[in-house]
Image 1 (cartoon, helix red, strand yellow):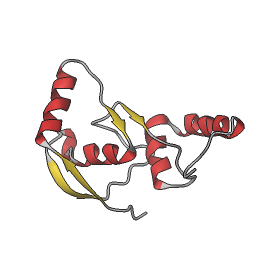
Image 2 (cartoon, helix red, strand yellow; image 1 turned 180 degrees about the vertical axis):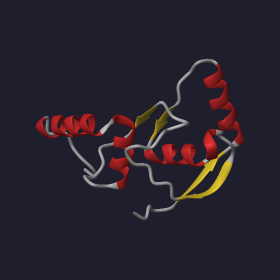
Image 3 (cartoon, helix red, strand yellow; image 1 turned 90 degrees about the vertical axis):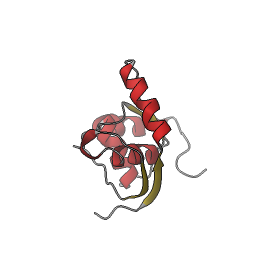
Length: 112
């Protein structure tokens, strides 16, 4: 599958903040899928480093995250690459259950 490209910029100050948080036993929670893609792309081999440029990283179930511990994001379209990314982190069954609950509770999805 060909993943869309996004411009990302992971600055040195952010890299240092994450390093300090990890050293203090803290967790890294990404706000949005672009943040996930940016941090994972800026960590070739698992070592986070400043990076500015494009990424076309495609994260799907089986991916081993090296930079994030959690994610805050919206509901994503079925069969989308972003839903695959979220499923890689949360698990397929959990995501299916969450979507079933959202439909039953009449949550608003996508663009509203």
